[in-house]
Length: 114
Image (cartoon, rainbow, N blue to C red; front, side, top):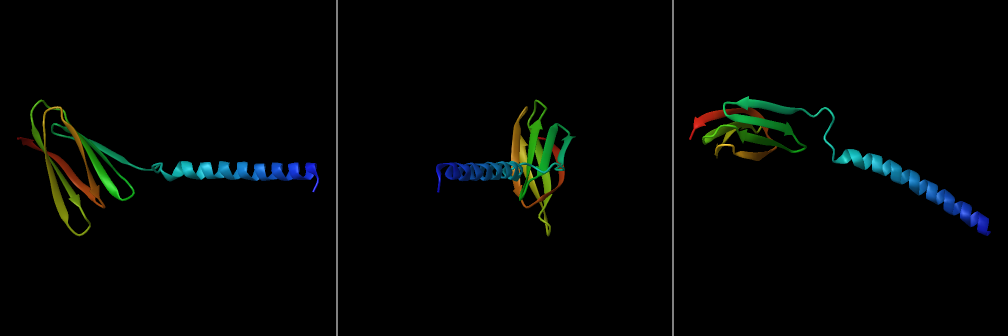
């Protein structure tokens, strides 16, 4: 095989590798990204501002106690066959989060001062 034929072969392989890497980069960019239609739910319940959104296998609820006093946060969630309750006592200006595996959020409320 001549030198020019080997160089042409290398150029062709380089072009194929470059094209494949561009395609792979485009596919990889979407793997970890959230879907464009993903809804983030936000709201206020008494002293608490909260937000949550569905992940692939879980739901994470974030909250912030906007009052100066300690309050109790109550999160009711469903595991398709049963409903459970999670409570947290949050200090004034306190923030936090809780991840629920394979759950749906039913309600979030401020249960008053602690």
